Image 1 (tube, helix red, strand yellow):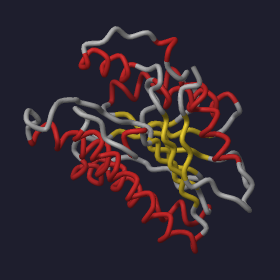
Image 2 (cartoon, one colour; image 1 turned 30 degrees about the vertical axis):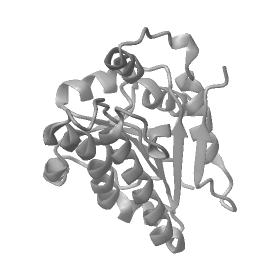
Image 3 (tube, rainbow, N blue to C red; image 1 turned 180 degrees about the horizontal axis):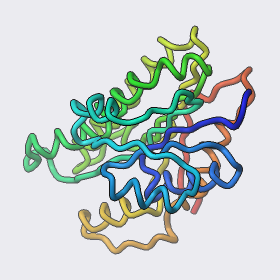
Image 4 (cartoon, rainbow, N blue to C red; image 1 turned 135 degrees about the horizontal axis):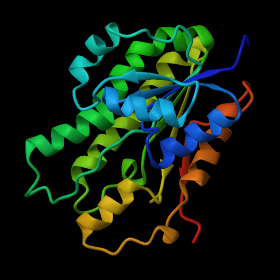
Length: 232
C-alpha cells in the first residue's frame, strides 16, 4: 500500500470516536475527521495535528452532498467509521416526529448517505466500513424506541451493504458496544433519572481496541458482527 491508510471518522470529538482517532493518529495513519461545523472542525484539527476535516451536518443528510461539493475531498479512503450518534429517550406515547426524525437522520440516514458518497473510493482501496451500533441495535428496552429503531436500521444497512459490496472486496463490520463511559452515557443516565458512575461502564479505549482489531485483521477474514459488553 502506498503511504499510510486514510480513515474517515465521524464522532471523533468524544467517547469511542475520540479514542479510535487518538489510536490511529498515534500510529501515523492519515485521518479525515468529520465535524458538524467549521468551529468544531478547527477544534478537531488542533487536537489531531496533521489531520484533515470534513464539515457537514449529520442531522440534515439532504444537504451533506451539497456541503461536500464545496470542500476538497480525500481522493483515497481505506476505512469509513460511523461512530457519531445521538440519543433521546422517552416512551412511544411521548415521542414526537421531530425526536424520531432527528435520531433517524443522524444515526441511520446520514451514515447511509456518507457511505453512498465514499463507496467509489472504498471500492478502489478494497476498504472497510465500520458501523458502531449499540446493544439497542439488537433489542429495544422501554423508553428506547426511536434510538433502537435507528440502530436496528443501521444493522440492516450494514448487512445489506456487506452483501452488496462483498464481491468488490469491501469489508463491513458492525460493533455493538454495551454501555460505554462517554458524554452520551451521562446524558442517558440523566434522562433515566439515574446517577452516573463512569467506572461501572466500558472504557471507550476498550471499544477502540476491538474496532482496531477488526480493522487490522488480515484480508483472509472479516468480522461481520462484534458485541462488546461491560466486563464488570
